[in-house]
Image 1 (cartoon, rainbow, N blue to C red):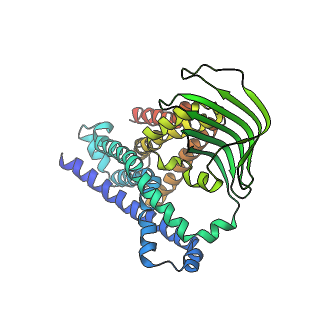
Image 2: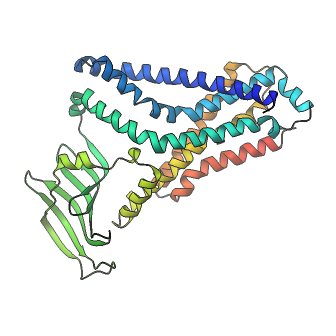
Image 3: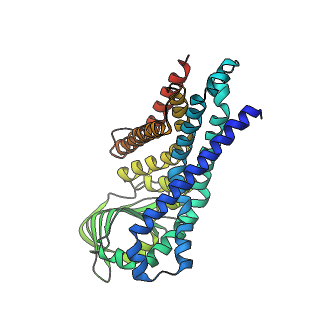
Length: 363
């Protein structure tokens, strides 16, 4: 690596680490004050307190790292521009891509790191963090009514149980689909119901359709309809709550298999939401590269006298616009306005295209 490249990369890395430390520190401090009453009420020991935040750090890193590398790139390049170093680099015969190639490579490496942390580390640390949270905040959790959206769990007899919502206080399920599989994972039975209520001994389902299938997927007969029917589901409400599938604890492979199984239930809304979440696992990791490209297009067009305060203001504005567009795209995808892939990738593709265009037209 050339001396000039090392100089730029070193400046970028130091700025990035400083941003990560600052934002992580602020994140943890705010969270401590938010949960301080719970910690004091539960008389949390130092060891449990430290483990609570150590297992939370990977999640914080995933949430802030793309924006930290974005801010670090803006600070690095605007400083080089302010000190006339970019002009000297350009005057020496280097084009914009040659000056910034190592910064872009850093963005690609950062995107890969974010993806791998999301795949390998987050499912483990998030599970531990939630277990600790359950121990620290039981009183707070019991104060609020819990309605869980899109509950899914794998029950006995090789059954996949899905419900649009689960009211924990009232022990009721809404819009239920239950798939029973054979040993080869072929669907052999399907139950569709509008509502289910646990009466203390068994689940009572209302407005029920029961389908039976051969192993090749062909229906054995017309579906049976019941206004009210008791179905032998051994999982009590507490078990459903414990065994429900949590998307944040799944890697992409597990989520893909999960989508395949849910798609057989006919729950189109759930499948659409899951596909949006699946594509977003890739797009959110790739955002580090996109934001770096945005930073490059900004830094080479800003005035030499721009201060760090102005640079930070631009960072906040551009970050907000990018985040807002991403959130709107995901919302449109889950509402069915856009197909899942386009809903997630439209914002990254649009911002990447605009960044490349502005970089190409630079003098």
